[in-house]
Image (tube, rainbow, N blue to C red):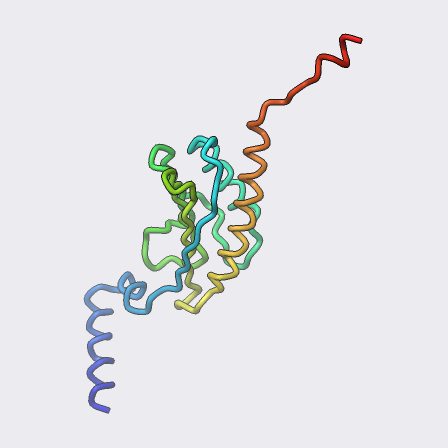
Amino acid sequence: MLRLLIQSLLLSIVVLMFGCAMFEKVLLVPEVNSAVPFDTTLINMDALNAVALAVQDVNVSFWNKDITYLDVLEGTLETGYFRKPNIAGLRLRAQVERNDKLIAITVKGAGPYYSKLSVEEGLQAIQTAITRRLAEAVQAKKPVRVSLLSEAR
């Protein structure tokens, strides 16, 4: 009983000293990680364009579609102020990992008053959308071959 009282007191002190920004670290906002393979013939801009289109395709409750950080040279795209604490909604960070031929994905989310959101559902939806958009990007890059033999006859 005394231990519970001390823990509650310490949590109250942390909240008073650091405000709501500490809740993300104290309460551990749900976060999931995964990766999607990609064809490295795509340049970072093409890969991130595919991710940006995929972000708009996702239809999950509380999914944040606002791209708030984009660095093509670094190969990073983030939505919903991913790096900031105390933001409600599902947020994405996608990082192009050229050496591993992957796009690393992190989805984290918290609802109002830090209620848990389905980060797994968000991850599954964005993985599917990114995979589809990357395939479209690769297809668009392939040169169209026209047979000139049929025209010569």
